[in-house]
Length: 422
Image 1 (cartoon, rainbow, N blue to C red):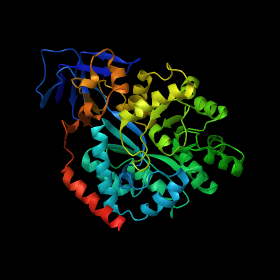
Image 2 (image 1 turned 180 degrees about the vertical axis):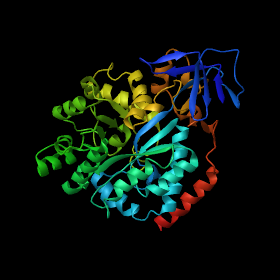
Image 3 (image 1 turned 180 degrees about the horizontal axis):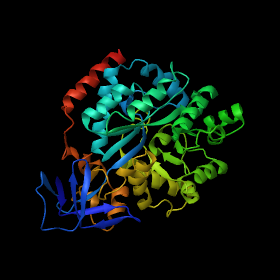
């Protein structure tokens, strides 16, 4: 067992609560949350928080982890040119070992940002899953079926395999996007969702051109098209959700579909600003993702949280829009629930021990006028003192505990990129 004591604990039951409780973990779960007790068990380790704050880890609810290989290699281009001229040609060069190495690089970056789980849609999922298991990191794989898949029946095999492979890995159904997926293939995905009564996800309404193209092809926006074929019969949601009509918002609200926003990526690719305030007002459940390092270029939840609230204030011309507390909840609880990780959404007995410690002794955290707002509006990766996943400390005080030295991971990644650049 591990004991966290002498600090603050942030939880989300009925809103943000900050207490002076202790938290004990036992294996991969939380065993106790409450005041100091004299009759304590023997602990494997006792972590003195020294006044710092313990809270649930952030969840990156949309990303492409191994895209770290494209960081700063494909910048300053609009989305379609970026995809077809830079991303797809370079992705064709990715080997299983490259996916493994660049996933481990991405995991390191997640840990420094207090991210304890990722919702990933990418390539070569066997190598991807192994990289996460070897590092001790939690991930949910989302299938990204599109017209480039040689064998679409592999989606079902992966769904069954990865939902039974390891406690740190699970799988959700999805397509890459309407504009990269034929109607026949989208209908196949719907058949899988119906067979397993499973939610479905996709990149949705990321750009105006995507929406206009879908209307030209089918006479409907992407959300309305997908709903019309039964894609959302068992729930799910969309990544980006920037260009949403009133009818799209109503659909997401009525079916409680997740809208997962990626503000840094949308800004960098000039895709637009998602209407988070309008979505929230309608009752649409919300979460936050970084997207991949090719379009961001950082896997940094602090930057995403700040952009979510600041952009809504600008977008709505209302400085009170999208308050920081709601954004923090999106980053922690919303992300977990969007990914199907309901047992990772808070600090409570029986929940998974996916926890982070935020250092309050740094100057950007003082004075302690409002801790939750400090985290969202002035927090940064320098404040992440510790990241625990599934009861294991994977990052602490600048050191990684993921089974391999950072220098080895860097060397493998740089070696591959040298061949790509040549």
